[in-house]
Figure 1 (tube, rainbow, N blue to C red):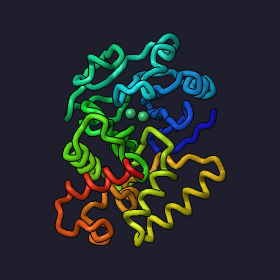
Figure 2 (figure 1 turned 90 degrees about the vertical axis):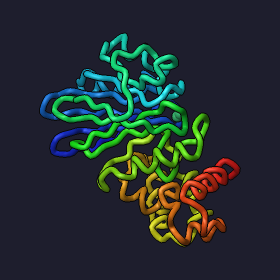
Figure 3 (figure 1 turned 180 degrees about the vertical axis):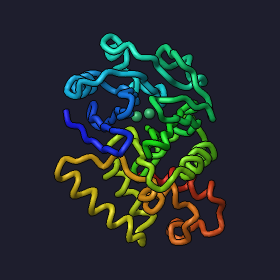
Length: 263
Ligand code: ZN
Ligand code: FE
């Protein structure tokens, strides 16, 4: 199974393709050798990546309870018995947690601080992990490349508030989202944001990447701010395109999300 790597002075970030369109991530602190696994869609490709790199696991972080994000956990734990971190609010429906987390909590991976935020919307209890020192955030099915997760449990108000929290991270933050959905997300984005030249440019880049079997995840927050319709709900031309010039940002968000569901 393929993987891709981004290396900074302090960290190595590995994106691992799992199942048909899921991603898992490994984040390694280069100074201490500590490694976190973020989400566990499928054990085999993750085990293969760890073996190939001769890495062990220090921590396992879960973003939300959906099977395609947790179902490989038991098999991973049988080889790498690392502590499992997840949302206290979802402890009843997540695998057994060693560390239960809530909005505003923080902990460390090696020498790096990890900030936890509640990003409810796709599910109520979905959390995201921001590692400022690694310029990386693990957002799974909340903020996604050119999209956001479907609202299975939360309200548009909740998801919009969650997206606003994530939009406050630094520009260079690598948004590590849970699925390779970018092409389909982009086709929809063009229907509400056709005048956005940055979006057209990104669609060209996405087509090129996918033709070469490259991942479009992670993506930077700066790129998402410029092209992701769910982060552009205050943009006048997007609002005009859907006839909601005078609506609140949350109303525009709700309309864009509803149109995507019907797309
Ligand atoms: Zn999900
Ligand atoms: Fe998912």
